[in-house]
Amino acid sequence: TALILVLMYTVIAGGQKPQFFNYLYLSNALFVLVIQTMSGLAWTVLDDRENYKMLKYIFTSPARQIAYFMGRAVAKISLGLLTMAVLLVVGVLFLGLQIDIAEIEWGWLAIYFALGMITLVSLGLILAGIALVIARNGAAIGEVVAGCLLLFSGAYFPVDVLPAVIREISLGMPITYWLEGMRRAINGGTLTYVADGSNGTVAGVQPISPALAGIAD
Image (cartoon, rainbow, N blue to C red; front, side):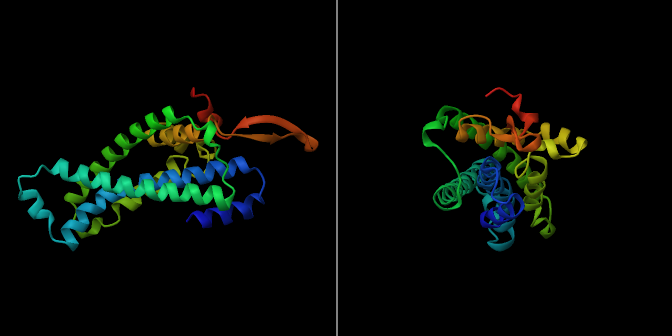
C-alpha cells in the first residue's frame, strides 16, 4: 500500500512539493494503528467465534471479558507499531521521507500516542460489541469503518479539500486531531509548504491544512 501511494504521488505531483509527500506518508504509516486496533478487535470476535470456536468458552469462563479484549488490543497495537516502524524506516531510507530525529517532540508524541490509543481501543471495543450481536455477515465491519475514516479523518489529504458538510464531520472526529498531533510531533511542528505565487514567484510558507493550523502546537 505504501508503494502504491508513493507511485500515485510521484505521478500526480511529479515529484514536487516533498512536504505533501511527508504528510501523505506519515498519515499512511500512522493509519496502520487505526486499522489494526479498531478492525483488529472486531475481527477478534469473529475469528474466535467462527474459526476457532472458542469464544463461547471464553465468555463462560471466570475470566473477565474486558480483560480478554484488552489483551487482544495490546497484541494488535504491538503489531501495528511494528508495521508503522518498518514503514517509517523504509520511507526514510529508500522513499524520500524526511524525518529529523532532532526535531521530534518526544513528550508530545508520547501524550498524543497515549490519547490516541485510548480513543482507538474504545472505538474498537464498540465495534467488537457490535460484532458480538452480528452473525457471519459482520466479517468486514472493522475494515468498512476504518476505510470510511480514511475519508473523514484527513489521512490522505487535508480536510480543507472536503465538501463543507463532510469537512464539518471530519473536524468533529477525534481521530482527525490525533493524526494531526502525531504528524506535528514527528515533524517538529505544523506541516507547511512553499506556496507558488503569480509569474513563478514564491507566495510564502503556508500550512498544508489551514483548517487545523489554528490549533496550537
